[in-house]
Length: 366
Image (tube, rainbow, N blue to C red; front, side):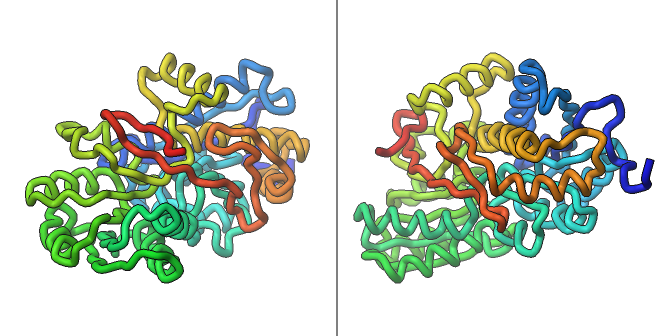
């Protein structure tokens, strides 16, 4: 057997690795990805596998830490991983993509949304829409629907996800009917007190505050805004998904909060309802969009592998080369989008939906 085939699966099964935070602050994302992918793997194996072969699935915790994410990648390589579903967060994904590109190993991230993940890495594809798309989409929605005239932004300048969305939001705002009256940053080392940023937004007369960052910090923003009797509209991105699950958070504070998301479990779509029911039965929890993206990601890999007639005895590099082409030739009917396709850049073609929290639950805005 040639040396390059050392990572091929023994016993005729495909080995799919996955990486994300199953412990730590971002665990709700990683566990959702872990379970969403696992559910799809279970369904596919029960239905006969991919090209007649079963899938072995191995998830590794990276605690949302770049170095630990690379260590997890190496652990999975030692296990014999042939494809990677991950990582879950953008920063870790950029670090791991450098490794997978060097190895020519196929990588599909369910939820890493930074364009830096796919930039220059032809082996990496994304399931979620990218940060620039979220920034543009949020600005377009606010402007087109006349949601507000004066908008403030609070963003995390130390995070590629948050700063990437803000940059495109600000660019698109110039084309819209609203004005950005305040834009204030915070960093990872200063993410518990938002009183200064909120006061500037309030003083500037902002009727809406755009929050392009994760739900854990956003829950603090909403709480602190209420504490200073400031009640603007709040608008976020897909990182907002999960805010209702924050321990000790008063869900009433999130009423009327809107955010972009590719998925909402309250949709009446038949495929989404089946996915939600099966997920709840398996994990005792309602799936969020991270679970949905991971679920679609596994089915995308299945469709691409079937298109390219991939078999487990192929080397990781041969599988990767086959999937690079096949990913651009498939269309899947997923739970995060109908007619989901991919560009050769690795970016998916899908439209975000706007979700609004009402009465302590998520609802799609028509």
